[in-house]
Image (cartoon, rainbow, N blue to C red):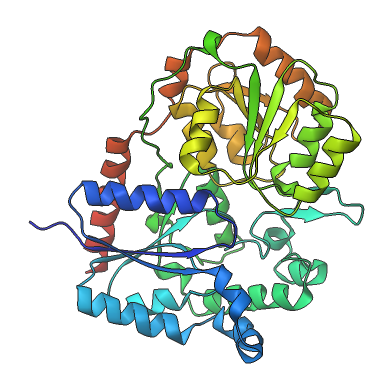
Length: 399
């Protein structure tokens, strides 16, 4: 029996991130197992080259892109696709990809990387006027109008309104009820199903599955005692990711080097802070290819994940575990749930730079077993087995 042919759909953000790595890994995983895989992708870098008319139309094409609908429908028919697996649709692909699959009677699997179906800002996070932030679930408890009031998407009333209208329209038409979902953690699944509160049935619970991110452990784990005298942050330089809190903590840390891999909106702030506080033991190395990041993580004492939001399932976290590197992470959301205290890492109070500083001193005094940490990950074979089972259920139920 031939294996199902998969169409992977992904809208790349302007700054590369963990979702892109998941797409790359899963495509290779499926191809290694004998599946034919086709990638349909767009990149938000295209937004910079849009004409004025196209920019004016963007709020509408974000809701439904006729271009996506026609192109995906054509690919499904010409390539005889069996499963459409979607990762991200914002901004250029849009939910029209679902309707192209529905029209061809092909099941759709949507991987949930963030909380965009529940929160217009996708993060359950809101900033105060002074720049500080906090976890906010008003969109769930009070409705999406809260997002418009607070301009939760990029601080823009119009862009937030477009996101809210998008969600409202597709909830009304039952779009989300027809999809199959892959959640990366039990925490994500619980959050997603909260859409069904107050008597609503926006999501079909029988179509929600859990499959963690995976990585292939190609390098040997360096014994913990032989690690470099350094810690590493790898990710977007953003308040959401806790980069400011991390540097605040490092003002009082002199014995270890901090390697910062990544770019983002807080890059200029980071450079000023490092210079103003004379942090000579902090090294910003900008954007680093994934393979190089893994080498740095593999020889560090720990990866630091000071996230200020719930996260999905950070790929850097999975990569760290695969390399036997412990994670120092915030005690909220998925990061807090995924760390096994004193086994695969340590947790700190997510909004306390002082607590983070104390945890760093503890991890240096403790002893971690790289082999045991390595065993915390979902393997290549396990991931394929779960994914194949999900595809089989979706195809069977879709007939």
